[in-house]
Length: 247
Image 1 (cartoon, rainbow, N blue to C red):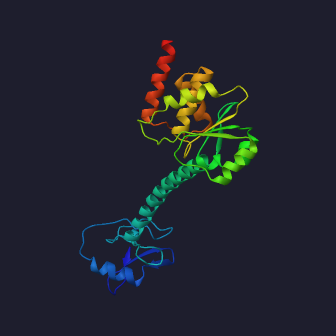
Image 2 (image 1 turned 180 degrees about the horizontal axis):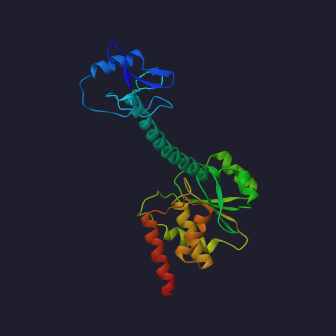
Image 3 (image 1 turned 180 degrees about the vertical axis):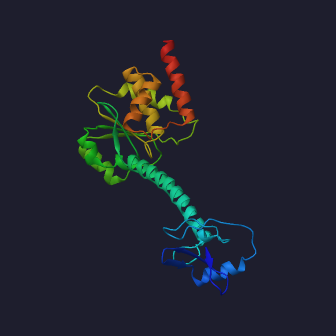
């Protein structure tokens, strides 16, 4: 290794070619003179690695110093992108749930469940041959929808309960079940088709089809995976199941 005469500055020779670090590196090197720390340079392509007393690996081939502080935000952005990916997945799940809420879910040959909006789509109800609608909410349908129900031969029965643990679903099940005929096609409907209508549908399947609570819920989830009866409703359905087993 040789050094030029003004001022001390490293040059690495290879054959007749040499490479000098840019002026910005010269200043950096002069400021670091007297340091006993040696570093491995990486900027001289094709030349042997030579210790020169300055960390040349901090510089690119043009002599510009790498800004390490600028590299860190890139890593942070990568982590942020990963976080955004998780948020996107959550958003997708929410969008999926919102879409299912709008669906009319066929559980078996005689039973469907839905939210309120789907229950107002009379054409869809006619396509499923539904002739009985059990509205398990305090909300009433518009006059125009009820008129369309009448024209389509659909009969609605309302049970205005809210989605709270203490709401009595057993009395509703016991009132509905004896009225359902083999030819009936039934829609159990609440606000979102998640808890109240699902619980009534489970009770009807237990009563009319002789299914266990777990089997009925499993069949419903296969068609509508957002089904989540509240804990109070599940407790009432468990009592209903024990009553059947006791008989």
